[in-house]
Every structure is written in C-alpha cells, then in structure tokens.
Length: 314
Image 1 (spheres, rainbow, N blue to C red):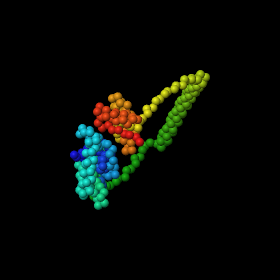
Image 2 (image 1 turned 30 degrees about the horizontal axis):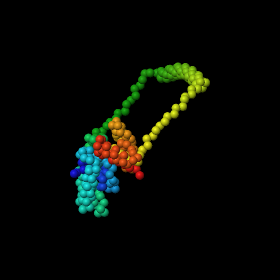
Image 3 (image 1 turned 90 degrees about the vertical axis):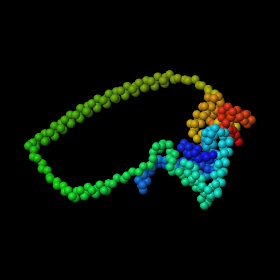
Image 4 (image 1 turned 135 degrees about the vertical axis):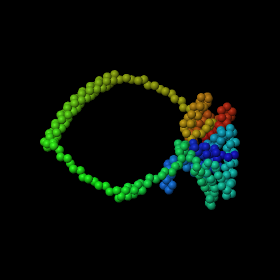
C-alpha cells in the first residue's frame, strides 16, 4: 500500500504529518518573493521539510487512512509501521525513496536522512490558483536617452513675453485691499459672537445635567437597596484514572464539537485537556475501576466507534 497520497492530502490542512516509526513531514509558511535573476514573481506558499526525530505516532495519519479505507485503527497502525520499516531498510541499503507530490529521501555519507521537497505543488490553500509569472522590467534609461537625443536634434527657442500696460490707476489697487480687510473684520466679529452664544448655552446645559445627577445620587444614598445573599451549590465532576478516549484533535474547536456530538448521543463526554503532543483529547467517560472502563470501551466500540481507546493515568 502506498501512503504518500494520504500524506500529501493532509499537508494541505496540517503543518505536521507524522509517519509512525519513520519521521514527520513539516510545512512552513513562505511569503511571496521576486527572483531578480529571472524577473519572476513567486506567490506565497508552504515549504516542506523532514524531521526523522519526530517519529512517535500522534494518530493523525493512521486515523485518516483508517477512515478513508474503512479499516480498524489497530490494523492500519500495524500496516503503516510495516511500511516505515520497509522505508528504513531501503535507505540503509543505499536506495532512495520518492514520494509522489512530496519529495525524495536518501541517506548521506553520515547515514542521515536527506530530503528534497517537490516544488511543483503549493500546499498553501490560500494561494490556490496563483502561479509564478515573469514581469518585464521598465526600460527607463532607454527612454531618457531617446529624449536627450531628440532635444539635441530639435532646438527649442523661448521668446520672452512682454507685460501689457494696463490703463487702471494705482489707487484702485489700494482701495480693493482696504475693502477686503473691512469685510474680513466684519465676518470675524460675527463668528466670535456666535461662538460666545454657543458657549453660554453649553454651560447652562452642563449645569442642569450636574444638578440632575446630584439629585439621583442623593436619592440612592438615602434609600439603600439591600439584596439577599444567594448560596449556590456547585458539584464538580470527579474524574477517574481510566478514560475512554473518543479522539485527539489539533484544533480545540473540533474537540468541543466532538464533545457536543457525544453528549447528544447520551454519553457523559467531556474535554480531557491537551496531551504532551499538543493534541486536544475528548473522552466518552471516566472510571475509577479499570474493569468498568474496559466493559464500557467494548460497548463504545460496538455502538459508536471502533477507534475508541482507553487512557489510564499513573
């Protein structure tokens, strides 16, 4: 069975896809850039890298494949682990592994895994439909040289203009300036008077509002209102040490949706918290007795989901 197509599909929605027993493929955001050598504009994208140290199963890949193929979680986990062993054996023998749509893996001289990502696929969904394109640079220097050459061939003659003599008398100019100053003074006086009237009206309104507030404050001070004390008894759910897990989610919103779905089915579902892998866990119920938890787990596997499993705290 080939699992590279499932890994490629998950990389569009998640930034980390772990292959149990082999390593993790990580997606990193990359902003748009311009290649000055080729004058090419590259849209935003996700770059894929590989980390062999993140090889512990987080349940994402196995759960996705088991749902797609309608198989049990444990059987699919065993099959994926066998594929990881086969990949490690091929790399140790000096062979390379090509994953379609993802990239190529091989061992270097120090027996460390090297990864060359596939650059033809953009895993950033927000950049869907955008592709790289080449832009033609603007030839500003060439246009400037053509204009200079044109100016050298065609001389321009500038003829100075003569100011026409007017027949107006000089005193008319001073009369116009005097009338303009008088009109500005009248307008400024009227504006100042209007502002004074508005300021007086605003002060009167403010005094009335202050008086009203003082009366209200005096009323409440003279007649205090005493409220009776209310005692509320809150019972907190005591969790056991053995939890029947319904799933682990990367987004907390998805975990809350799963809790609501299980409560509608009649389960005492609750949000358990974040595990050491950063996943939000949802439980069907919690038990103190491990035997009761196992009986309930078998019932859940038959009635609701075969992917349910039990988590016991030390």
